[in-house]
Image 1 (cartoon, helix red, strand yellow):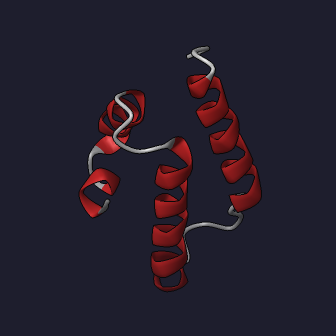
Image 2 (cartoon, helix red, strand yellow):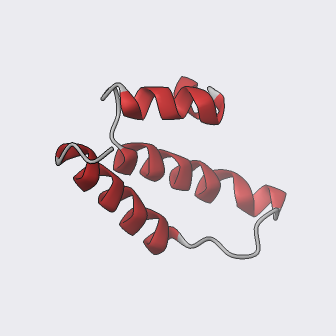
Length: 68
């Protein structure tokens, strides 16, 4: 998953679209990276983790239903 975090948005979109990883899995990985790195960086003032997970779940549901 680490390499996917550095793949850029286009690579991440391709991986989700190809079913290599779910939107929820990718979101959880990104949030974990933020949690690990941001205390030292102090780059983010607000992280909407719950909203990100909800959005990822909706995307996964839409993909499962063939809507995207």
